[in-house]
Length: 84
Image 1: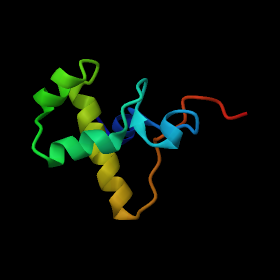
Image 2: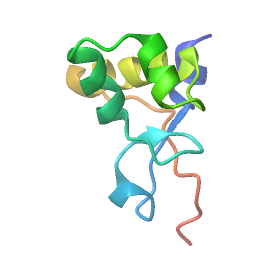
Image 3: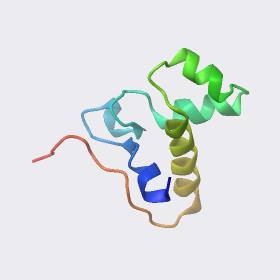
């Protein structure tokens, strides 16, 4: 999966989790996925806790976090809700 496709698995909208980036189609924030991995959870642990989560979602969360920290502009994260 290419970078653009991966980042499209992440979205943010003001009306969903106060605009925090989330796994598309869920209310699971990227920060929760990354934090749980940092504390030692495995991808299998996350998928057991959140059955809707796919391996690609976890990879996308990590890529989003890396891109966010790089300071370079990036695209692919979109709001799933029209803001009018």
